Structure formats: structure tokens, C-alpha cells
Amino acid sequence: MSKRNENRPGYKKTRVGWIPEKWECTKLGIVVDFLDGKRIPLSEKERKNRQGRYPYYGASGIIDYVDDYIFDDELILLGEDGANIIERSSPLAFIVRGKIWVNNHAHVLKPKGKNTIGFICEYLESISYIKYNTGSAQPKLNQEVCQNIPIPLPPLPEQKKIAEILSAWDRAIEQVGKLIDAKQRLKKGLMQQLLTGRMRFPEFNHETHERHEKDKGELPEGWIGRRLSSFGSFLKGKGITNSEKKESGLPCITYGEIYTKHDFVIRQFFSFIDKNVSQKSQRIQRNDILFAGSGETLDEIGKCVAYTKDIEAYAGGDVVIFRPKGVNPLYLSYSLNSDLLIRQKRKLGQGHSVVHIYSAGLKTLQVPLPSLAEQIRIAAVLSACDRGIELLKKKQEKLKEQKKGLMQKLLTGEVRVKI
Image (spheres, rainbow, N blue to C red):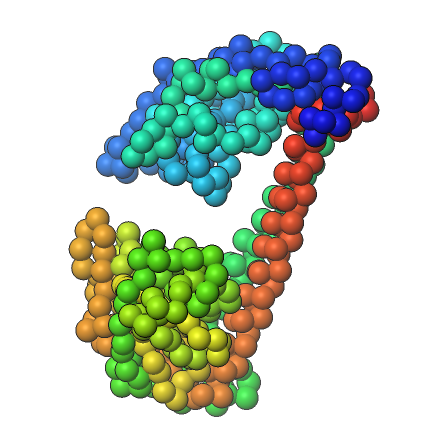
């Protein structure tokens, strides 16, 4: 970009790179006021005793609702600490409006004068903060550093137009997000009905269509409840340190990836190992169920995924492998991740800061099993839901990438808008 702009009239070189001559390059502390002194953190216990209708914001968004507010304005929140400063897995800068409470993990910014809040926020969200990180054990953006972040500033009409264009992309991304949420709610409802037998397909339903209240919670005709250990065997994943993971080679699954990267079935691989490392690990087979043996919360513990590929792959330590017989692995994965089974697994978790679950406990899980034909039918319906959700997620990611490319051009003046 710089070479092209060097040969173009009307541009100047600044701390943020080449920008139009009529734009300013200033510092964040000059265009916004930091209202950090008004923030008040509340502990989880305090929030529990002060439940209400006002959003309580942290570094990445709403984390609770409380009975009072400390801001009533249109403001920008900029995450002050946390891994998101580096990883950027969620928005770091975002606009909030109305009556809210903010803790001490997000900077509170109010634009000065007539500067457009949308332009400032979009620019803050577009940049990398790696060079501004002042933390060691945990990434952090202190206020002094943030005040000195350079920011380009177009004339006010151009600020507004750029913000309007990018807001249109945000609305499109948000709309797809609402569709994803709706699909996920539909799937959750189907899981609650299909995996308990409260909803049956006509070809399998030999009972009356309406079940009596006294039958609620009982398994329908043709279903049986079986202990997990009665229809399969357990193995342990082993080996594979972080330093041994590569960008290519033999695929492997780590316990952390099970609850951060996969949902119900392994569709792609994120880690790989060399052949010599695989010799000390545990190979997995088609139709295996892989449990995360460790997690941060009781709800995360024991999350599992089905492995339905024929590709040679391996499981690292803290992965519990279940090798089932005579059941559909996709149905089993959906069932083991259902609310009914999550409640069972919560009782098996051991530990506090890190929670563990072992095969000895998993063996006792009571799984509701219909006939194999009905298992396959249920799995097919839920898999279709997953495919629909996945397509929408890909559409949303494509929109985000397109917006990101447009941001880089608009927010530096490489592409100009018509006023």
C-alpha cells in the first residue's frame, strides 16, 4: 500500500501509515475522555445479592444483570485485560447505550466534541493490540498506553459515512447471528424431545400420541436404559505435549479441543504430530467417542465428540476413549451431551480449579437407548440441524472477513467515500 500511495498525490505518511492529507493523525486520549474512575467492580457474591435489569459489563460484554447503573450514555468499552487482547476471539471494542454498570476490566470511553462514536469504535476494533500489551502473566492494556494509541481522524462528514457503511455490515452479521441462535434453540428443543422419547417418529411410535403426566420421565415403549459400560470398553489417550504439536503430519485430538473446537462430531483437525510421537500416543478408531477428561467447570467436564472418520488419528492425555458396540455413534454423542446426561456427569466431576472425570465414573452413566433404526433416524435429524447451523456460521465468517477487508481500506483512506 505504501508504494502505491507514495506515487499518489493527496496522501501523507503518519504514525498509522499513509492517510489522506485532509485527515488528522492524533491520539486516542485527545478524541475521547476515559471515564475509568467511575467504574465499580462487584464480586460474584455481591451481584448475586443485587440481581436486577441493568446490564453488568466486563471486558468482552455482558456478564450479569444488577439492580442499579453507574452510566447512562452512549459509550465505547475497550477491554482492559484478558487473553482476548491477543487472541481477538470476541469484540475488544464495542458500543454500549443506556443504563449500564461496568466493572474494572473494561476502559470506558466517551468521544469528545462532535467526533463520531461509530468511526472511533470501528477503528479501535480494527487494530492489533499486541504492541500495546503491558501484561506479563495476563495481557493488559493500561490507560496511559491506550491514551497514546494513534488514531486517524477524517473530517466529520467522512467519519459519519464510514461509520454508516460499516454499521450496515454489522447489521448483516448480527442478522445471521440471530438466525444461528434460532437454529440452535430449535436444535436444543429437538434434542430434549427426541433423546428422551417424548417426541417419536410415526414409524417407531406404537403408543398413543399423548403420554400421560404420570408417564413423564419414563422411557417409551421399545427403549431401554443401559449403563455405558454394558455396551463398550474404555481406553486412555496419552502423550502429546504442546511442543510436539505441528501444523501438519498425523492428526491428533487434545482434551482442550474437545470442548473448544468441536461440537458432537469431529469434522476437522486442528493439531498434528510426527510419526515418532504417535508411537507413544493412543490411536483412535472410527465410531469412538472421545471425552474431555479435564475442564474448568462441572458443566464442561465430560463433554464428548464422536469420531466417524477412517483417517489415522491419535488422542492425547486427559482424553477418555469409549469404544461402543451395537449403537449409532452420532446418536450416542448427542445423548451423552444432552441435558439429562450432563446432569449425571456433573455429579461425577472431581476437583475445584480444574475438574476431572474418569472412566470409572463414566462407566456408570445411564443412557436411554431406542432401537438402532430409531437411533439412526434421530441422529440424522440432529445432524441436519448441525449442517444448517454450520452453513450459517460460515456465511457469518465470510461477512466478517469481507467487513475486515473493507475496514482496512476505509479506516485508512485507501478507499474514499462520497460525501
